[in-house]
Amino acid sequence: MNPVHRTRRIGRRFSWILLGLVLLLPDTAHPDTESSNYKRFIASAGHYANALAAHRRGELERAEKSYLEALERDPELVEAHVNLARIELDRGAFGAAESHLDQAAVQRPGYPAVYLVRGLVAARKGDHGRAVEAFERARQLTPDDPELLTNLGATLLERGSLAEARS
Image 1 (cartoon, rainbow, N blue to C red):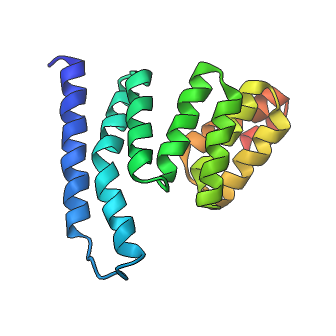
Image 2 (cartoon, rainbow, N blue to C red):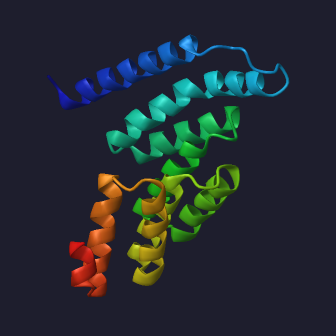
Image 3 (spheres, rainbow, N blue to C red):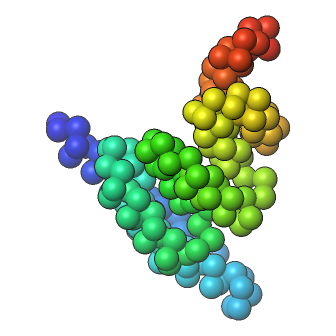
């Protein structure tokens, strides 16, 4: 099977699974707050799923467009900001990446992916001390994340902290 066709099938399957999960969620929330969040989530889910699929295929322009469309429908979609930061990091636009991370951190303080990507940005800029601090903060929130642990170890090695990297 063609890998692009397979990725599109996976993306569509993910969209259907996401929609199915959303439909199973109880709608017992207060009408002025929670149900409006629910409606925003429903409105943004398809765009977000398309963005994830495009991002995985390496189609950064299409992914960026879909993440932004998802954010138009749900401005509190923190995951979209984090993934836009990843795209900007890939482009070397560190300021834009940090701006997306700042927005995500305001919306959801303590979200581990914000600290993980903030550490990636700092590491790419060569600021290993700040990168380790961000990775350690993420590690407090999600201690077993393989991406986090790999990047923390690599950054510690780059900094010359072999003993810390081994632990």
